Image (cartoon, rainbow, N blue to C red; front, side):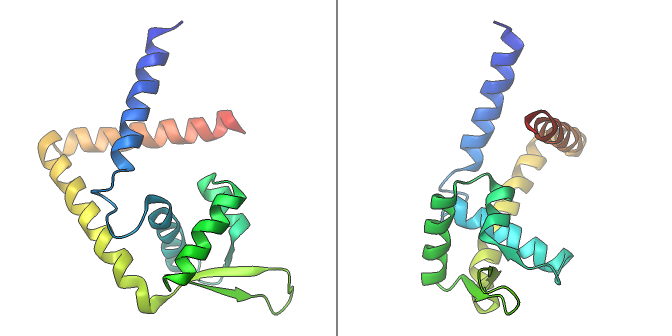
Length: 146
């Protein structure tokens, strides 16, 4: 077995566990925060494009049952709103409830502050290189897994 494979897997898992940390996402669980992030950026970049649970499953790689549970919980908390399509009644669109967006913004700001502390410790050059490498690994993993 290739030791480099094990080392990369170990680093990847350590980073994943570090990101999926209750200190980072104390106001909402990780999956809720992830979904909010996707919906938020979709609203900013493509306001005309409405997202469905299927779209969110594709983006997050979550199982449909897990997505439905998470979305139902988020709807009860009034973080999201579900809207039935007027054109196709089978389609249900998911959007952030902008009246509740502050919960997401506060958590996102705390995460950015922690990341800022990490960058202060490792330096901007190392952070830039980490961004490049993470994007390269993520893009390559997406390509390989297709």
